[in-house]
Image 1 (spheres, rainbow, N blue to C red):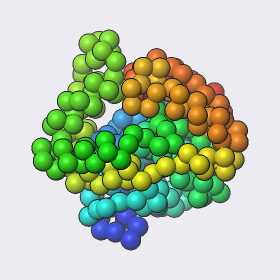
Image 2 (cartoon, rainbow, N blue to C red):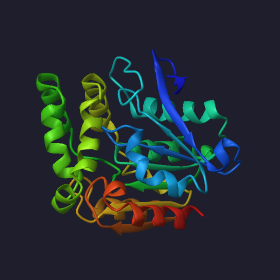
Image 3 (tube, rainbow, N blue to C red):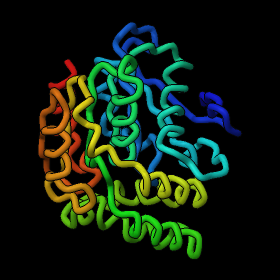
Image 4 (cartoon, rainbow, N blue to C red):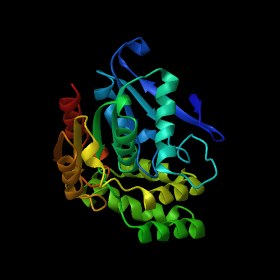
Length: 264
């Protein structure tokens, strides 16, 4: 396994690279950034398709997966700094970026504050502002009081449609286990980031081509949130596909095709 030190913090970030030609490729870099409560394993349905064309770089956000959990609170700038640290570590001066939910907020920060590092931007199942301060404060209290079991039970209902949950229980359970394996302290600290992160007034400064992908049945970040992003940035387009919040897992073929059509 490969790790890079967390900038100005304790611990390390787990990362992996999948690429053509067993790592000897000089293909463009594509950085994938996972959602709150999942690990970089959430991108497995994308790897075969994307790694045929790109050096696909995945990492576990601090407090998630195999990465360390520094003491909170965290900021969106720190989470984006982790992404830059991973890019620096592998020598990627520029990369395409694809982030889902909280990963999409990291992408928006990078597009606004480190645009020289991002070639094209894919924002999935996200928003310029996700949820409300009251909702995230309640979630933090829930996690502190009861851990992540209750959160996991409710999250899978929002992350996947009922037909998919009935048709693919193993896939749903795999993602549920990713959430249960997340550090409660890291999860709560990331919820604190969601209280503050708000790019609604800033998206007009995003200049690189941007694709906003929505799951048509997503109750967390509905298609209107992605249409807002596509309309607010300088060069944006919007794409709906079947599924709820984790549409990359629920509709992988359509998701992969949309990303490749945009990036190639």
